[in-house]
Length: 355
Image 1 (cartoon, rainbow, N blue to C red):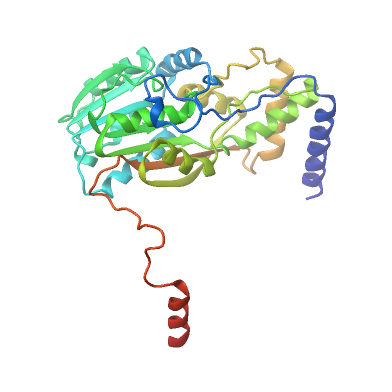
Image 2 (cartoon, one colour):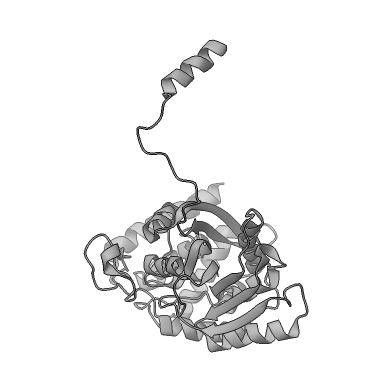
């Protein structure tokens, strides 16, 4: 306990010292109120401002090209997230003949569908040519329950969906939308692509993801370089997810959160896993050079602060699941405010008298 306390005190002192003598500017995530160019500005409240670019989309495409060659045949973490997301289709009595699956973990989604949603036609889209080719080859090689689904493959960008309006019944995005520069705009395009009463399912990484790596990286940079630079991308917070769904115009929005803790033998294995998932840093204002001594210090601090008794290190992945529907007259609607005929005071008095 004493050793742990002294390490926490040392970390606090390093953080305070780094703030005083930091020489490198830190990134500030500025909330964007802009939307994609193919959105009707008349439907948007507030002024239209230039899009704030946070991520290098071309770099992210190259990272996904690399991930197509490094991807594991079956990743337990990715499969768990995809399976959890697809479980929501079993809660729906409605069928979804035509589905659009956006980048991220699209191959895991296709492989784990297993007839859920009664999908007849599946459109798989990714920004990476190599990833699309990987999905196409996997679909041709595997003989599973999805062989009756007509599958087509498209190379496209989530920020500019090449999908006709009101053309699909279901949009699925598993671990991909958090890399878009304009997340509200991308979600609006997903809503427009849906037919009335169509379903939007998405899983994105939340702000608590890789919190152990963030701490280790910050302490190592301040100790070795005297300042910090962005090494891990900013991610949405849980409180923002419901606002995103409402802002995009979805009805009956639903948000829930799961945390997955994956254990690795060392920090290098964690980085290799992130590369295989295509989840490495793609910030525009990133520092392209990582000093060797800073990298070694990060690994050492990670191990000293978070290692378990068996020598493994944990990495936390916070996953935010979002559900929303495109509006339709048959959907449930909230009553108008003030239309209630019984007050909560009357209900409370009734229960009080019964007890």
